[in-house]
Amino acid sequence: MQTWNAEVVQYHRLRNDLAVVRLVGDAVPFEAGQSVDVVVPQNPRLTRRYSPALPPSLDGKLEFHVRAVPAGWVSGSIVNETRPGDVWRIGNPGGVLRVDDSGRDVVMIAGGTGLAPMRSIILDLARRESPPQVTLYVGGRSPRDLYASDLLWILVSQLPWLTVVPVVDQLKDPWAPDRYNDGIRAEIAGSAPMFEAEHCWEGSLADVVSVQEPFVDKQVLVCGSPGMEAATVAALLANGTPSEAILR
Ligand SMILES: Cc1cc2nc3c(=O)[nH]c(=O)nc-3n(C[C@H](O)[C@H](O)[C@H](O)COP(=O)(O)OP(=O)(O)OC[C@H]3O[C@@H](n4cnc5c(N)ncnc54)[C@H](O)[C@@H]3O)c2cc1C
Image (cartoon, rainbow, N blue to C red; front, side):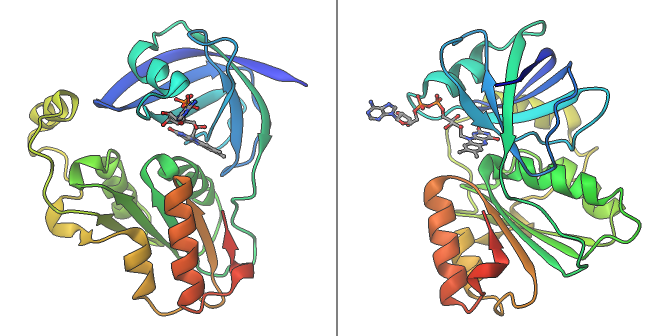
């Protein structure tokens, strides 16, 4: 199977358990919304799937958002041990998340790093002459978990066809500090607006979509942990959203 190499050029630790990794290398032939196999030098025998957070670029730019899962082999080493100069092996692009050309409104429901493929699609849609209306429900455990809320704020202010609805399980952040988040907040202190607790709906993504009108004649994209996806799709179906409208 064909593989491509890319070198880490930037590593940003945004939270205790989350890093954004930017790479430059071979142009990988994927489509916005797809995921790829990744092999990192810290664990060269293990392959994991990750979703690029940028649409494909001919100059080989890639970005990944990786959350360290407890006791996970690969994600923990990416978040804790990635260094500029590391070379990642990328392969096997695939997946069905996409927005078609019908012009129908789009509903995106993203839990945690499920935001990555949605962001890739949004940036890809921004290249279209007339993008469809997009509503992005983005979920986390608490406001601190919404790791891209400053970037989403900028996108909403620039893209008139995009609405972002932040959703958190609880409005109060955990008492334990997160030194990476605290450091970033101290650095930007008020200079970069972002989604805060007062902008968030409280509940799970499944709770929130279940009180919406059924998403009929819309394209509904769901991405997150297996549990989040299962609960959200069950809520969508119970709410009257047709199954053929849902991609995950
Ligand atoms: C299509 C797709 C796209 C994805 N995109 C992203 C993305 O963009 N960003 C992202 O962060 N993640 C993404 N993921 C998840 C990613 O592929 C990995 O599953 C995740 O990073 C965990 O990998 P790991 O090696 O750290 O964990 P693993 O070592 O595989 O372990 C996963 C979990 O299983 C538990 N476990 C492992 N072995 C055992 C055992 N023997 N007994 C009991 N429990 C065990 C671990 O404790 C851990 O909680 C995606 C997954 C898919 C399928």
